[in-house]
Image (cartoon, rainbow, N blue to C red):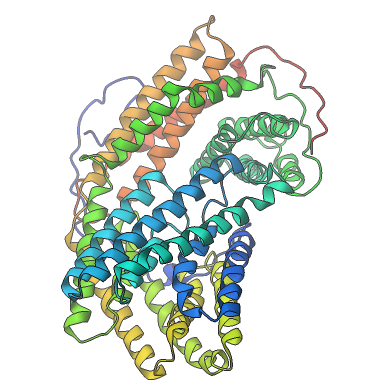
Length: 575
């Protein structure tokens, strides 16, 4: 693969081989730096509190707090799907509930059939690897696979009898059904809320790109616009609000494909004002027609119909199977997870730790898209857990005042974890750690010193062995994914150029080609960023990657003035 710049549409003049650095620098201070909270941090925080409070208080009323682990498995499903439109969220959270119950069932059956620590650790590591791959392939999250691994690993080391399993699973499914209702309840008040937030983010990113059209802002704007289109495509039937949102995305798209502050759709202040109104609770702003856009709403209805047709669903399933297939770039990460979790569990068991599942969960939580991000997570997890045990030591006397006090402490830390984790993972872990330790108190009081000592040891050993496995299991497929993304971007760019050059092409075809090119550029940037953080791999084709991105954005800019005849958008007072 050539590392020299290539002329769009033509071959490279010559190849200049480069030797990659064997080891890349690992950040430290930047991994612990706090960021701004997510604009929707309160949604999962409130959802998990409501979804947990009802089962917790019900068990408290009947005096069966020992069953709270089973209901918690279902309640935690309320953390998922908050960035999705409600039509897709309903399916996604239902899948999460069934997946959670399936993992719990495997753990409970295994725990009831064997008391061998070696077997339990092996099953826990295998479940963690499977859960990691499935969550990455389906792109469910945040919080991704860690919640699944926490539940299934804890259940492995809880004594069980086969006759008790149906009851535990019924509690999980019941709590999961309530969590599903909690996750979808906001649709009764604001059914286009997720779409509005996605479009507002696209407008804000486009405004930043219009004000400072550098490569970083352009890539961020492309990703935000692509996410907004995907959110609108996955939403339900067209409504007046969604029609206005589609027109707003067209303005955001025009701002990033041909940024130029001060004129029309590329005016940053105008885009920011639209973003604020879109994010608010009032009517969605009705933008003027974007320059030279077609009146049939840019082909999104036709594309939505294609995606929902039988062939579109088959294509989506084939894409998922490719992400799970033998050549998947997810396979090295799955092997890392399997080996790292197994090593962490066996090492802690050899040292006599009574709860090796903590080490398994710690190791599983480290594995991110590449080694650099995994190193960041190792630092964040270790710091957060060590501070969290101090918080646990301080709050334990309060939690032992009464069972109600224990329930309230768990609910408080559940809310705090989601409120803080978007600032930085380590800050959220400060709240997650005492909550996980307090859950053990529902089955009976434990010596505080033993719990704290075990958790500190499991954290350190889990983080060390988990990161060791990440360094030993190489991910040479990361560069291969970049090369595949480069080829896909070249094909998408060529198809867009042919469609734009064809005077007989329908506006629907032009807009679909443009969106596919944007999606390929987003995938290319994601693949490049992932590969840049890996060790022990082939040299990245950095010059070709840069040339492909520039050529793709030039093609996008060329499509902007050729979308069809100018039309007057109907006035829509949405909401």
